[in-house]
Image (tube, rainbow, N blue to C red; front, side, top):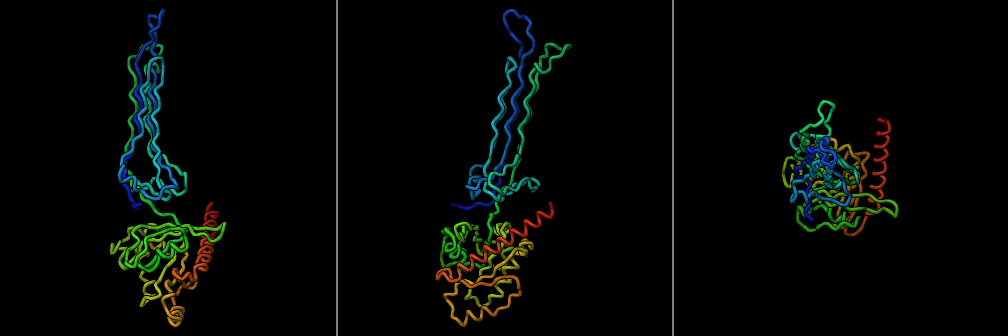
Length: 342
């Protein structure tokens, strides 16, 4: 399925039903009083997060959503039926903005999290509501309230525990296919991954985490080169980052610096996340080359440095365990911070 992570839609709440003008017409009561009912309320517009969705693709083909109008009031003091609300489902991780001023209306992260976007118009009062001792036969009623309309910008940021970042063709797709059940497209040319891939990594029967394979970065991506920063937004929600470095690279240290600089240029707070440096494709290098790589000084004293081969399944279990421990530590720190704020 094609991945769409930005969409613009128009939503409109329902108009309130008009109030009714009528008078009782009953046998034996020649001058019945007013009995016009009130109109029904217009439908509201809601947006809800749904864990079963993973793309905004549907909004490309259906960009307009409208709640039902309220029905007008009737005679015999009958209130009009309320208009049906409309509930729009989006993937978890969707940010909803007012397109006009870019203001964030909601950030829907948890499954079932719901937000009221627009309220429907109120139903107009019927003429029975206006009867008074001095005005016993009012011949007017209130119009229903107008519905509201708004243009929304939907922005999807993938929710994952780990974000894999690296140059094109460094082995990200192969890794995610090995450590999870995800089946990304794999080939020996750059930019194989054109959309973020999500995979669930099982550490054991009761431990699992979500990993995201972010399309390859190149130098200048934050300024629009290559695939640009189109998918960098998906790294913002991750708990930790896995920097995948090609063991065959002529300058692994420079590769790492470039990747860090691109993330920093996009959003410097990203680099505050926990990190792992991981060399890939060690099955394709000699023991001497492996020893050379182990001597590289990354000046990241608290950052684990691992060596793996996805094809030969070397170092994969250690990588999974390290990622799991790092995710749990990160979550513990975040919870402690939240508790201190409360």
